[in-house]
Length: 467
Image (cartoon, rainbow, N blue to C red; front, top):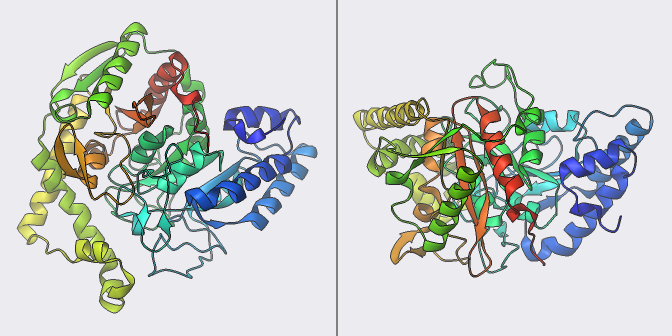
């Protein structure tokens, strides 16, 4: 095989299980690409080549001796630099934690290691995950593989860029206001934010205890299902996880969408969009209709001001988490993040109203999902902007990058429901466009089934950038 890095996780796993492909050869193929392309992309902040070769050699030996563990055995991955990794620096893209080397793995890192993965390194993130661009003043900007002058989205931009450039077979990101789905949309891959409580946050540097969701960023829906299978499940180290059974996500991919009711919340998600995004998502809806789904326009049941009020919860939790460091070493923060973390918060009544607003959104979204099976909407208002732009245009309107890229993803974090972004088109400039599918709590299988049906019927996921 000329370059095994072209294989998806599912394809590589089949070849490894049949002993047609060695984990050692697969690892070396990825390390060669990382060495060649990472200087241009800055997807990784730490490359763990020695660890990767040890992992790959161990996997190869285990498989030869009949110890095949499953579809992630010998698969090279990258982890966002928020996931604690024993003996490997985890700094959260910050200067504050530079040199911090955890003694133990995060739960997700441990579960992936137990599944037999090969760790290639730690991927770049916005500083402490507070941003949508991964234009990091401490670790440098990550570049979009489709156009190097464009952002890869954030805050899991390094993970998204690594996937489409084939610098990893699978990666993990975190999603507080869209930070898995935004990079998936802007890079043209799949990002899955599962239900709040489905995947453990133990050992993951937090942005918001209420809204953080760990999850996979991969090339295909099937790959995302494989990674989610390994990391999902109750963890006594994270009080937010829920002891509910974890289904077989790959088995759930099949069956199509015939008879499914897909709600389209036009009032909150389609009001302001780049025209090319609007066309791409409308054409995706036509695909679902042709596949037998019932597509219905629905009312989201909340307004933008309620979302912004609820987001105060995230700001308050962020200020609480950073208070001690901010007081002792303020100059180690970028001016932008220091300003965000120093912005005055509402009084106790105001914070109580913010929590009330978050409950209102959760009630509205989950109530809507009692009437339809899924919700479908654009992931971002527009394709990727240029690196360094703080204001961007959406259909003639000037917005901050945060508003343009996170406004449509935040509600599903607040509601805590599963939401997956997958590619549904490209702009005239050749930039990916993504749509998101959201489902009921702990009904990840339905989301995966619908996404897989669309992916199978289209070829967007087969496109990759030439770097």
